[in-house]
Length: 165
Image (cartoon, helix red, strand yellow):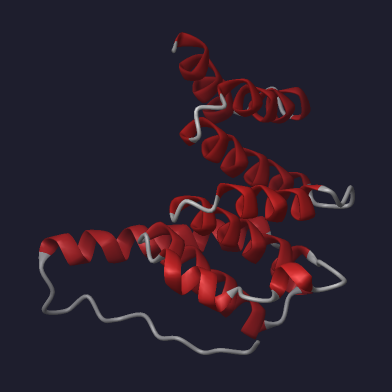
């Protein structure tokens, strides 16, 4: 699955497009922080970065197409797991919640995931649960993050928000 994409230039664009492109680059940077660069081939970093940008920009169909077939792979390494998280988010956004939960279970079922990647997947799954109105499950995932990392301020904040509703 070696695909090369290019990021459009910000020159000559409207301010709204420039903001969206900055948000997409930010998502790609966040994705890069979740995976150790020395252990991942450059093409895999590019694919993950593109999926992160597409997901941040709401291009759910692009994420789903780019990750099609990954959830059937026998071995799920960390780059594949991160791609699957983006796939699950995109599936949920288009209304395929059961499929999204199946993908999340695949990612979170492996106990050898890095903490940051696991927390990212739990946080994304919590947001999907919250969007479905399943606040108890969302709180469970957020509590798992806070239990493993008491300094996770964003998870604590979201947990408080979900309790308030």
